[in-house]
Length: 107
Picture (tube, rainbow, N blue to C red):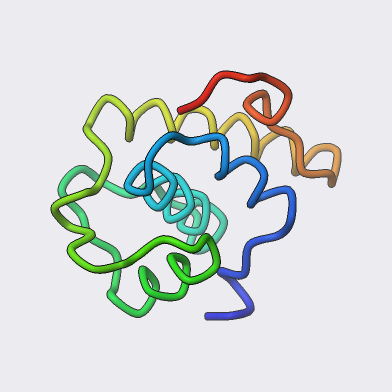
């Protein structure tokens, strides 16, 4: 889990731009799942409790009752699109780069 889901400083900076703990946690979980195993967090899907706890601890968010606090479908889709752009850009440049990290827009 540490190998695939440890967040970097640039990851944490992107995540901190999201408003609310539930949005930050959802964004972080989507980022982790897009990197490994390379897929989206589906609607009404809850990642394994161990992954939620591991990610929540890194971003200082409580993992209790996460199922009830996952982002809305609209927010989930917006996060997915932003993260796909970010990861494609990062893969080409080998540098963490995300449009959100340069803007003041919060998710």
